[in-house]
Length: 85
Image (cartoon, rainbow, N blue to C red):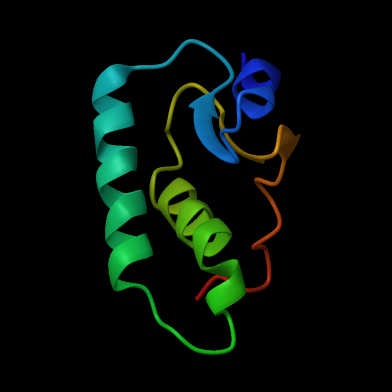
């Protein structure tokens, strides 16, 4: 599904790669967009999307579904490691 979305022009996609609890999904989305919209600007701005993803994932260690972030169909879930504050 990720490759199909990428081929259709969807650059970024955040999705669970296993069965997920959809209440966890709602909490994850809330945290992700909060970090994305209110996150710090500055030298990490190019990494803001991946940093927001990593922060949300780190705040929910019991998150089901093994959530991943994809950029043009490639897994970029761990690119923000070291940049997350």
